[in-house]
Amino acid sequence: MKKLVVLTGAGMSSESGIKTFRDSGGLWEEYDVNEVATPRAWAKNKELVLRFYNERRRQLESSKPNKGHLGLAQLEKYFDVQIITQNIDDLHERAGSTKVLHLHGELTKARSTVDKSLLYDLGYKDINPGDYCEKGSQLRPHIVWFGEEVPMMDEAANLTGNADIFVVVGSSLNVYPAAGLINYAPAKASLWLIDPKEVVIPINRKVEVIREMASEGMRILAERLIP
Image (cartoon, rainbow, N blue to C red; front, side):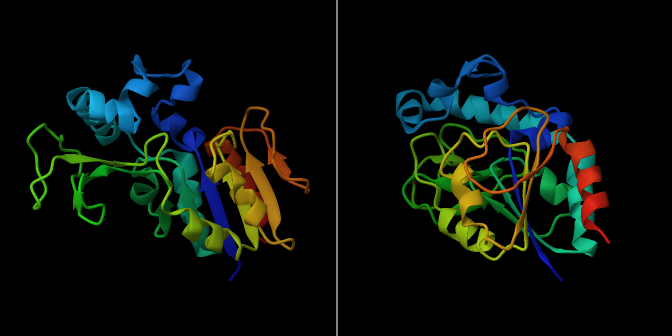
């Protein structure tokens, strides 16, 4: 069974109503990204950061996987599918995908501020000031903020390096280090990009481009990949 590795970005979930700050002038629901998604923001105003992510969690609870998520999950019948996602939502899992690597963290989890290994499943509940881990420190969203290292990058690079087919769906390929993953795809691998917008591809190789939203793009991809 061929290995299909798929890098998904914000465009994967936009049809599910999950907004991206890149499409709204650097704002997420009227919040300046620098005030809610950086270590400095956390140090400055923990209550604001917690409120922002609590709102995102409530939004996610009412969102549903779109046809793109569902179509990607269906490809597991034909390929060994590994998803590497830049998204912090759980829509891939809810659509039925079984192997999902979250590069930028997971909205439905919290972690200790003193011990990164202490993770807690939240579901769609709030994190409030005064919610502590077992070591007595405030819980924070399990999110990789701007300016923090991306701890899962080595694993993502290894997965990409073993791909027979590498697909990018709904990613601007502007956010590094994730955007550089395409460079790890083997020379023998076929490369695909699904996005309705013009995307500058940071690699000098042939890439099959499907200029559609995720739902329609995944349908077309399935038609082309499945014998």
